[in-house]
Length: 258
Image (tube, rainbow, N blue to C red; front, top):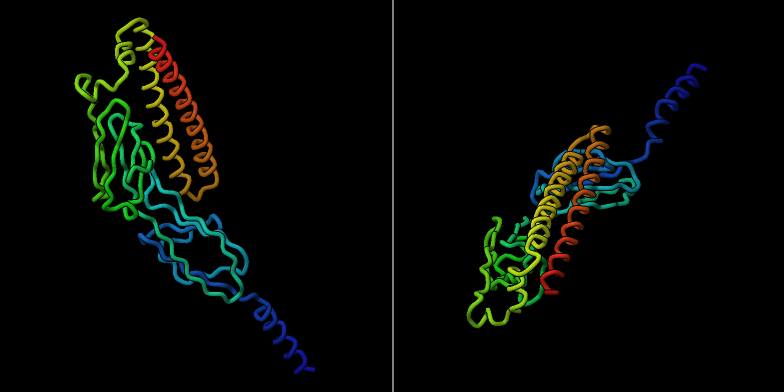
């Protein structure tokens, strides 16, 4: 009887251990290293993460961009399904962004006569290192530069001379109409365009700062507040940009109809 009780106790002690499911393991490496890692919305540390123990099943792995701010590169998000005993290694790479802008902005960036985008914009430095770009905008001389450094680049475009061969190609009525009737209306439209465009970038910057705070907090209340602020300022940015384009359209209409 005594031996039976001992066997029963041993079985009770061993059974929970044997019934526990075998975990899976994940190792996470990033370039650059020391990047913040989230697993299933929980911060688990900074890379490299070595043999992180996880339960079998589907998990969301997120590497937070090491380049935050208005022009941040998007976070890397992976969804992986693990089986018991599986040992997985993930390698994620963030390219250094290079910020490119022009004066005036909204100039078009070309690589080998293929449009890349309009300023301001960012490019992955390692991908385009050594390439030669051209910057073009109506009414301004084309500028060229070679990408050799990840430091921000500001291209100042020079107006096309109004006298000479290049100036003759510009519609005379468009230039002259700047000094004709409805001058106050044009001034108001131009000022409104600039102000609302600036407001759009300002609100976008505030939204990105709140989003950055949202990514780096573990407090649910703070996360909700930061997320709501991000959505609110993103909405303000879109509205300001829409108003800016509407005012610009009105200005172009006045210039072209005189």
